[in-house]
Image 1 (cartoon, rainbow, N blue to C red):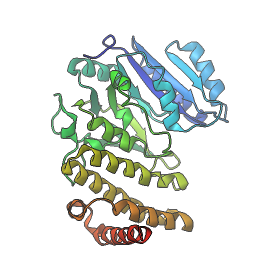
Image 2: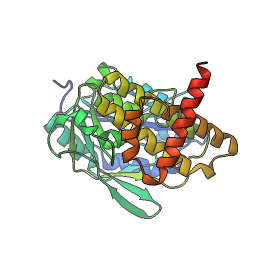
Image 3: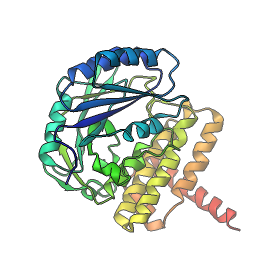
Length: 332
């Protein structure tokens, strides 16, 4: 049984140096006002006037609650701070550089209340410059509740566990009481990858609904993992190490194959984008990726490799050989 009154939702928003995006964000807040909604905004020690602008906006908007970090802690820690304040039936997320269509939040909460799953996922619109590209949440069924492990699937394609967007989901606050909503603060990027795997493997239920009212900005400089090129970019490697840990702990080879497939796919993507990285980070990318892909038995890796992008299979197999060699050498 879910706790809290129907329609009650807290929206978690981490913010850092976002003054340029605040007019659009606040317009989105105003267009999505509904009874029982509370916006928990955590300013992560911004230096561009964001804190003052948010405080001024909060004086005019009772639903807007602003928290301040004294020093920068990162998005995962900022989200965790807001999650500690949650007092609602549902929790969802918004990134400050994105926006929601008018009525998106009300429609999403209504469907979540009606279905009552532990997590309800939806579609979104990817924004690249002036382009608007609809993105569909990959789901076995829609408008029905199913076991969240059904959203993991076999190697190949995309499934819900690899649709890593907290803002495209509505989550029962009771999951937080089970310790399932906290983000790994040791990951500067890609913390949402193990976060979703943990949710899907925790005996939860899921549903997917039509509500493509969230606009996800993917402009250059947006700070997303796929757009960044700094040291934090490589955090996808320990993030997928945690994913493999979760799959191993499940004891199910289906999940091990899916997790290794995800590791292969994301390694292939970032190696393909290696020229954006300085030479020292490229070396670390190869070395750490080799150790990641060295994990598990050969049958698991071969099953994952069969479904991986064909252009990358030789590269991935080669990295695994290097990684296995390094592990063997270290064990001598």
